[in-house]
Length: 484
View (tube, rainbow, N blue to C red):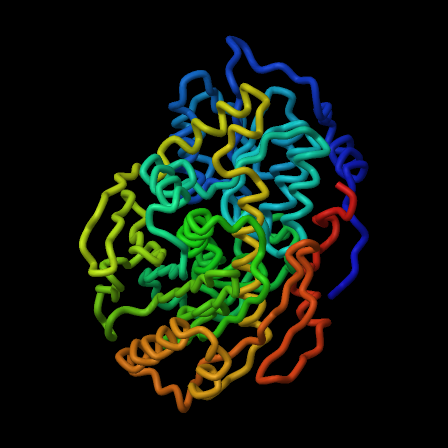
């Protein structure tokens, strides 16, 4: 891991002073005219574009600034929201005195740094999932929120789903008995992202786009969105989508910390492209007393098909098995079943439609207790995804029998590995030629959130690589500071 000096708030002030713009004091601000909450959106891709619409339509909220490093992405929303300030550099937006809160919907590698800068600039923050790009920096956002007395909401919107909230309480009251295990499924079709000769994109400041990440020539066809599948900017489908269902599963199970151990197995199969993250992945979370399994698939039922597999009718959601039955669902809520698969009760959901409203209410009240997805909860769910990816990245090709042996203490994990093998076989993947990768069991101290041991097949491996991935590295001046 390359060591860089921290980019402090003092450095930030120097940078902004050089640009001729004044930094806003971090506390004691009042809301805008008519008591409006003045909002800026940073990152205008699909999710950011959605945020511009949602926040602009909330009563008592004014959309006052937009930012995206790609100037082409600013054209339409600036026309749509006449009079709104715009900038390709988010630091200019953070300097403005007429902004109360920022919504961050950039690539993952920018989330933590922007959230911390926003807190230092006296803004409240809504930051998309995963809230961080590595385990360490998520804790730094928590520190910044506390130090600067900021309201920080994670973009895990299902925590604001009315039906899921009711279901969580139903389970918490013991109506289904003790939780036995949770199984998160995210089967979303994602094809090849292509592979081209190295190039540098035109029409934008590519160094600013890379920000904390190394400035490397691109080999993927699309600059936007497909950053999800490259480690320097994304977190794969585990951090991109699977985090939603996992966050709800953890909520239902009542877990508020990291698990004691994590292991991941998987691979990138059926495509020859510039992607680095796995498209078939099982992450085993050794929570006590009930483990959680996160299963990600991006391949179809068979080559060329548009359909995806399902499990108990779930394609993107969770199953929480308890002694007296189970919950299955996510989008639109879900159902509770008895152990004979008979429906007991439905919980109708709304997809978390009030998540932005919940954030604005907390901003107005200056009460973080109102938040449905406070930053610590967003951090824990993000960190678990990082741990899964970290185990995968430390792994090496392994025979199916070795993978089964590694998870032999977890019957459902073994069953899932068998189903994944069948799934890959249906997609004409020869696991003899391209075996799955088996990562080590990572032992975590939930109190310090540090990895204390990495072990595979009874062999302890060097911790330096694990520690480096958990801590991350940065490119000056885009450095997440040691002292926020």
